[in-house]
Length: 187
Length: 143
Image (spheres, rainbow over the protein chains, first blue to last red):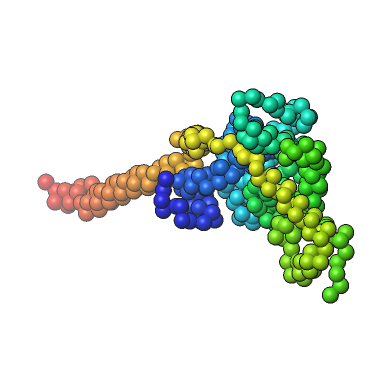
């Protein structure tokens, strides 16, 4: 790790990377690798695929770096690359199962609380997967990546108003999806 | 200030929760919430939904991810630059021009020396008496 690079802003690292400094690009990967992987994982719900797609996104970003003009932030730009790869992956793979089929059976060996937490996580995860992919993307970027509406708009190539609308619909749909589990006390 | 209706405020609660409202609109919503338990309850539900979402964790990224990714990028860079790269062509071209210049210089220089040698021979020949002159002298001073 090049300690000199850790204090530089993304824009400065991008400039150095464009001039051929690979260690600058390495620092960019180091900064955003977990976030990008998490984002892709929440879209495709498969850790092996998410890791493969994240790696592909970084390779593509490196190839296209000379064309990056800096109109958006580097993070939103590379997230957009990851998002497109994740969307393409989803269209190539089969859709997820129905929510009711995936509720885990009680395991006698597990303590009640940890089982309840595990069940809640699976229910919420599956509810997220049942959202339309654009609503899911918007909610993931907002809740987990804590992006502003403007940043989300840059990633998704939509207007801020469209992002707002997506998030309202996503939250409404999530509420509906989680209501049955809530009534049973699972969430 | 006219209070916003609940139906309008509820459409704004999502962006209010995300900290996206500014200025007068934000103040209007805050004022409405202070006086409307129904909308306050709706906001509380939105917050609870968000907290439930954050309970979903993701797997840890492989510790070798950076190494593997960077190895791919290095390989890509090396594959992109075979020896007959543009830089190599420019450098080879520059070297060729330098050699050409040196060769031309040597050629011109040797030609110049040869020309001077020929001129000297001609000058020397011109200085000597011609055959006619030699015969004329011999005839003049007949033996």
